[in-house]
Length: 394
Image 1 (tube, helix red, strand yellow):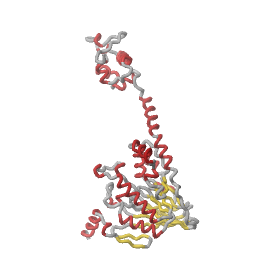
Image 2 (image 1 turned 135 degrees about the horizontal axis):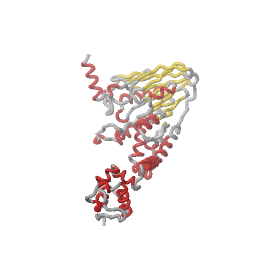
Image 3 (image 1 turned 90 degrees about the horizontal axis):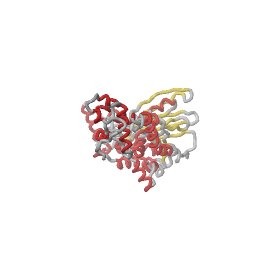
Image 4 (image 1 turned 120 degrees about the horizontal axis):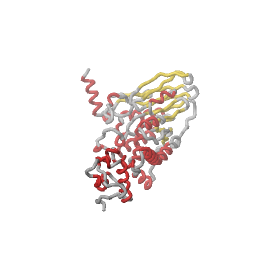
């Protein structure tokens, strides 16, 4: 019976040692006792509580020899060694990442599906924006962006990462009662739709930012059942999530999602970039500046400019773009950041590049030689409060 003490005849039981020195109950006795118990119950895992009720060595005795129960089991050969467990965990970890590897590899094939070069000629133009963060985006920023795209009629529109935010999948302290995953995704997709309408013949490139990457990883790691459900019944995949086919958008993702640590993930994400016409580099992170090409990055929501020089490009600029989100964005102190986007012009023969940075101000903006004034409905509480403070401090 499970509650009766088993007795190993070839060694003295604990009851036979009562009144004697407890050291008589040796380490070997404890090991043989738990092995004997395991033999009597081959279909049962020997737990600490089970041994406490059915074993012949008290907890005080076996603890003296082994320290803890897992080590007791290891010494008796009933549990894998630490090294063996390490190997098993590594195997499990890699097996769990196999599907992530497959999705990760597929992402890398979506970067030139809708490549266009309809405008033949020496000079190329691009409009680039970054960090719009779906529903957090400033409506004035969006209006100026759309109008500029229509006026410039660029060869390329570069969505340089973090067009979506979806903080529900991130590490920010978001009140679950305020979650709006569907609304945020729809808002981001609506931005892409309006950009396509503003530039029907342009090539649109969407460079994966850290916010898009975390949505994909969440679906793969935290919600695999939902992913299989959507994939099996609705033929759902990454292209459909971001409507790449519907709006004819290239998705630039050179990083490998097959990572195990945050540090590895950050290193991989710095691979998400694209070079244009041999003279302009679009990179979501500031790491791109070290590559030594004219170009731009986003991510930090603050406009900075560096003047650089090398033998290949001569004197050139690297721009860190401002963001597109409103001042009262939920994830940062937006009053410290800048709003803006870039119009880029490149001479493909000389590799000369000119950047025209369009700052979106609190009340007005100047873009492509055209002035815009913020309309009444485009003000929002945090901006109004900031402007009132400025006026009162005059």
